Length: 106
Image (cartoon, rainbow, N blue to C red; front, top):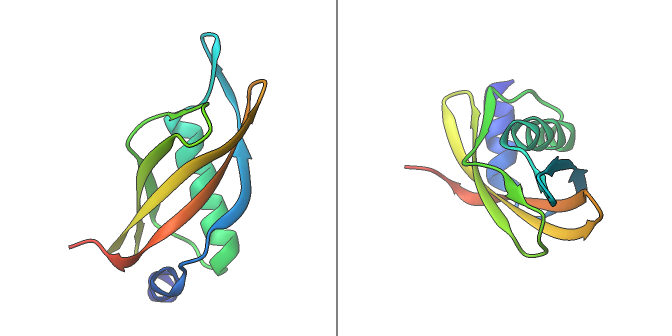
């Protein structure tokens, strides 16, 4: 299964649409690192139909349209970079797109 996921991630270049999560951090909407790790992993697994070993994001996703966060998807020993971009913010709800890099990390 991990090879299937890694191969699928290599082929996946389209954005996953309408992924969303929300967490209130002070007075600014944001998605916490922990929630982002979990949500991105779940969305990628659902898209590909296989389990990933892990998704590890660098930090929180700021609740600001256009804000980005980098994550690393690990599947079967293959690491893929992932970019998460906030697409809309309504109150404390942050919606975001997820894009897997075209090539595995070195």
